[in-house]
Length: 394
Image (cartoon, rainbow, N blue to C red; front, side):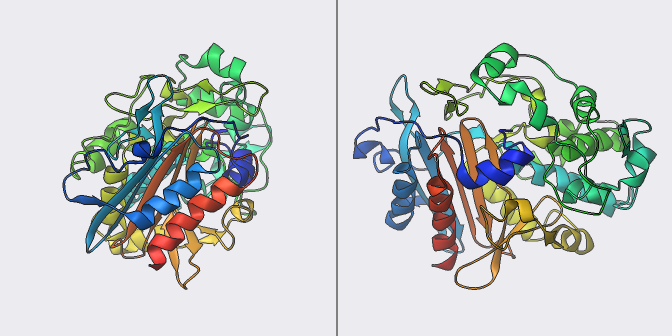
């Protein structure tokens, strides 16, 4: 969404992020050195240097966490709220946008492991008539292709004013959308390619995946993510909301100009049904680290399903942001400068950018979120990537 929830945005904005805005930053005391860290974490000078480099590209606030067998480290920069000038704190919540796709893919793969559906099942089998018209054929698209972004379905967020402009956001930010309505936006367009014949990031894929979860289980994707992942892992600051427009508790406020003239506006409030299973979730760096550790550590999926998730294909749209990147089932695989690779799933929504990197065994994680549009070129993206690479290569 410019989303990154959107494919065009993922292809371009994930690499260049939204237009930069001149920001007045607080004094060094707001970088995180003066806040009280979560239990068991310590401030990291090396991580702070990476956060400071991101802040220099024009972000409003940044929170970062790095974990390995030695423990957890944090660093912060900037402000959580421009109105109050409150400093960012390590435990602040934020919208994780498309990073939530990994949660949804995990639920689908758990259902596969339970024998309740197959990755080779078609969309038409589970959702008769939902994907049809203008050349779209749910009978030719598999669940695997949805999770892998090889379905060819048009990305609904590419024709979604709520994520495209200040006026669109202000007009529709409290509107409630059903998954069927979001899919209907995509069905107005012909597919980008025949199923399995290409790769294109489409948020429509995960809206449909969320609908399949409900058809299989009788519960919404939100309920299944909460029951299967959030509660068992003790992710107390993670939510899979349905229509709530607020972020409860202490959180980072988001700001964006939507690449328009004039100052950025506060875009924190948003009825998350607009993102649905493609990007409605809220979390913290600590909770996301715990989730990724459990997932890549083999505690959430059986070996066959985890292997399927980590089996990747080329993702050329994402190459500008992550050279050499490949995409699995709700997971990216990105080369490390020191050799090997890490797993990840970025997430962008106007005003919020989530980035992460996890070792293949889940023993090392890096999670960060930055607010504001960042730079008008690719310097914010490069600084975020460098922080992750530096931490995982240390």
